[in-house]
Length: 117
Length: 115
Image (tube, rainbow over all chains, first blue to last red; front, side):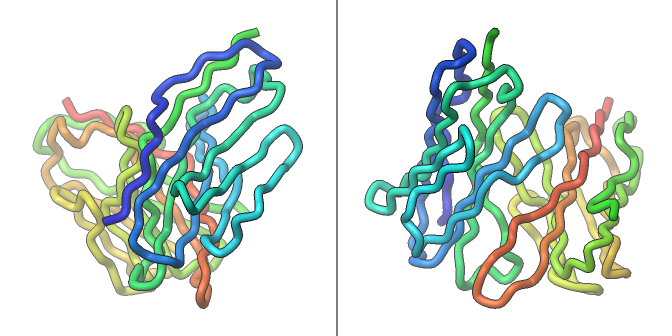
């Protein structure tokens, strides 16, 4: 069975602090994709990143960075110099292949990040 | 290009009433999905469709039905609403790719309250 765990339900930081959101996943498949989505207070889901299981290179996009480690089945997300606009719920999600005919996403429970001024 | 749209945005039902949620996408995507979001549980898949005329059950299908008569539309029906179906419902779509997986594009959500 596939499972995504985001153990941190809520994190509160002060603006300009760095913060890391943890994501641990379980899958027996060797081929899979991992995603991060952001859900701001307005409610929509915003795609942030996709990573496939064969690409363990870390990625940086502005203040955002992602650390993918297959050895520990983790795909952690770090925000550097956090800003109030980063306040949102962040979801980690997994698609396993093959055998997933509909490319179904399995979501973690989400981490609510609150950045205080 | 509107992406994924959902109708209605809000709805209040009484127990036992029925309703249909409409999802439309203009990206010519093959795959469409209905999720529900409950506090602390992330999004859970209700039903999905891999093409016009086909549907399949997801993780939490009980109490819901779906139809995909047109490629661009995916309808979610509640025949007899229950308070346990109070939730935020999201529709999503994605393109069919060979050997890979694109991101899913989500609609703005429908907040449903069942009294």
